[in-house]
Image (cartoon, rainbow, N blue to C red; front, side, top):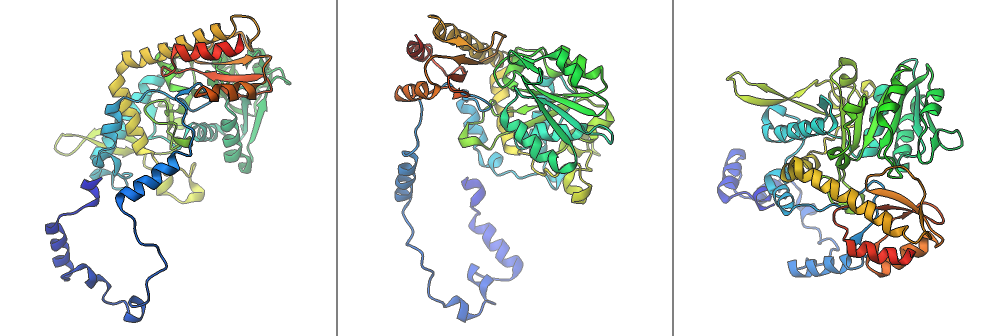
Length: 442
């Protein structure tokens, strides 16, 4: 940070000369002495750097830090290469601000452009924005993009992340838009997955779009292509929420026929970090109607008057340029640094590296499921295929399993029922730890 926070003595003197003063105290010459000469505020004396470090370390020691994490449900513990942490911490990257004066911000514009290009490549789409707050806000913004004058109903299966449903409701409930969450009671979800026949029956002329996740909250892989076909047959749009790590193995949203792809790029180099900041991504096709409704910034590549490659803000009729009540969205953040970190992660991993991580995750998950259910006492709740998350049902109480794992230094899966746990396995989980947890079940 020193390159950003400090200025040289020469630079200081040049600024003083420009405004006609000789020292910093002259800036306060107009403040009455009666104010300046008041007794000091009741603030403790400052501490040394070592004292501050010791105190912060003491606070940090109050946290429980698990060596092994087997929990996901939307936030995933992946290995972050040291080069990503080092480069993204450099002051020229860390302090770069949002490009309000776009033509003067070529560096940050290029970093955003690279991020958008990578997201398009992964999702099979043609245009992506400069990100939103997180995966939940991306889903909510995408749902609003699909609403038409006569189509104001959003269908959401109950097998998506609860926080996504809550955020969609928060965004849309005051806008005279109906959000219908359909589950097992309506026959919409069977054996943990969307039932396509029930989906077709639920669609009508008032339906704007369907939001579903691939994989879903229970970790199951949906029949995405047939879901998209069923929704499009009724003239509605499809929003596909993705765990981006799965896109190294599974068909992209574009290949499946989705209209909009959203998700959280947190697995790409961002720490779990107590819940944020994360990185919501959005991508869509280049049809004029959908693209113009996309919130956030879109960076495009062009040439300047000398024929040199440069970058600009494209389709600038965005939230920050018009009256609030006229805006389709009120997001004005571009999560630029988080997007930069994700781009650095993807560049460091490369196509094959990303595929290797995805294969490692799914291999460990399938090994864990095999070991957990080996003796038949514990079973998988659903029999569908999964990526790196699955739900177990056990005679033991879920809270009891979590407590026993914690004593071993392992954060167990997320209890989602009295005897049900949603487990997650990334490349950081060791086979030995899986075997230790399997012993609890068997």
